Image 1 (cartoon, one colour):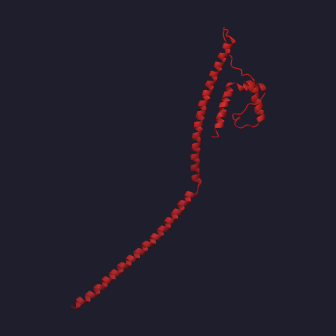
Image 2 (cartoon, helix red, strand yellow):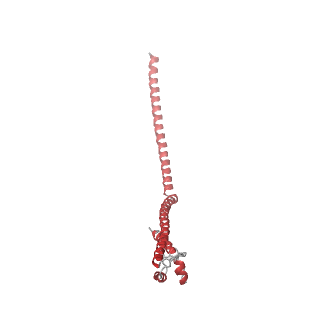
Image 3 (cartoon, helix red, strand yellow):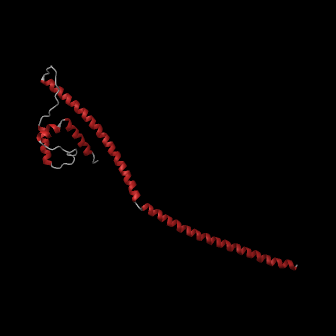
Length: 183
């Protein structure tokens, strides 16, 4: 996914802050500060190379703890300093890792919501459903007219049948009545 590059960049920036990159190198070297997306979207490769090669050649300065009245041999002090720096780095990177994970989850959920909204938006602006509804209504009206015509034809046939029956009945009574009067 495209956002992973920016997540890695955020992690790198947090690590550079722990190493006091801006105070130690950029300000002393009179270089401008990098944006949070500097590595993800490079603008001038030569400037990048100069800036970061100079930083890697310089030995990082670790925070110094002041020791009260106690003298610690150089090796122990350096080991303690490395341990403190490592702990500080782990604490910082743990927070960054958790934030990176949360960012990835939120970004994934955001993508899902964007996709749903896009689908709903396109269906709302899409005229196809309303065209289909209009076509269906027109078809229903035509079928209703045809049914009215068929009902009219059936009523006409039924009326003719009743008339024929009543005429036949009248003709039958007409022939029966004169015979009964004769007899």
